[in-house]
Amino acid sequence: MRAMEIIDIGCNLTHDSFDSDRDRVMDLAREAGVVQMIVTGASEDGSRIALELARLHRGELFATAGVHPHRAAGFNDASEALLKQLSGEDEVVAVGETGLDYFRDLSPRDVQRDVFLRQLNIGIESGLPVFLHMRDAHSDFHAILREVRDQLSDVVVHCFTGSREELHDYLELDCHIGITGWICDERRGTHMRDFLQEIPADRVMIETDSPYLKPRDLRPRVKSHRNEPRWLPWILNSLAEARGEDPEILAVQTTENARRFFRIPAL
Ligand SMILES: [Zn+2]
Image (cartoon, rainbow, N blue to C red; front, side, top):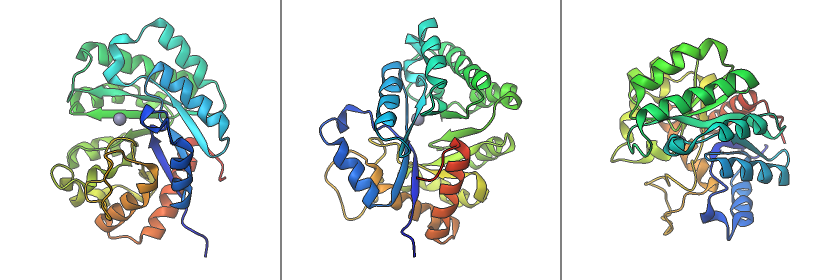
């Protein structure tokens, strides 16, 4: 039997917490069955470095190009030009991370909305799928997305943390849903376990969002707070359990979804 092959669709591998041991982190991920990863671009520099990293590991790593809503206040015409340029590169497989985050409100909300729409337009022009972030901003996020949905190709709401109603709003817009270790957090994520099985099999993907969101129930316990792509099987298993599915079948399905969504060949 072939070993399990899974894809981490959201890994912030450019984060400086990986600077001292990035190769080792990748080795451990491979050993855990993580065969490919999409490296999230969340800032101008981060998107550039994600592309460089993807070029160093062709076929295994891919990059997105975007500016996170936290950084929307610094977004200008030069940012837009850079993202347009990056979105034309072979290793860049999606526009984003972009979206709205009203939980931390690190940029003014009207600026977040404007910068979100500008990046959605890059998705429209390039034809690339978009990688979206939404936290505590469903109503505005959904309204903006709905307006342009027909012009976009594929859409993933990454690290989905919302309610059943919000989930169905996104599914109605034919969005894909990215699931992280948030569902492993008994303080705030277990509400989702009741409706995770309502995500159609061909719309669900998995991600760690490393180095953030280490699964809180990870066993054996690991001292470091840093999340790593090697914990992706833990998230897969939690999701499979909540959906009442065989993890191996879910692995095959989510990998197939990720390759179709990001248009990447098997390694
Ligand atoms: Zn995010």
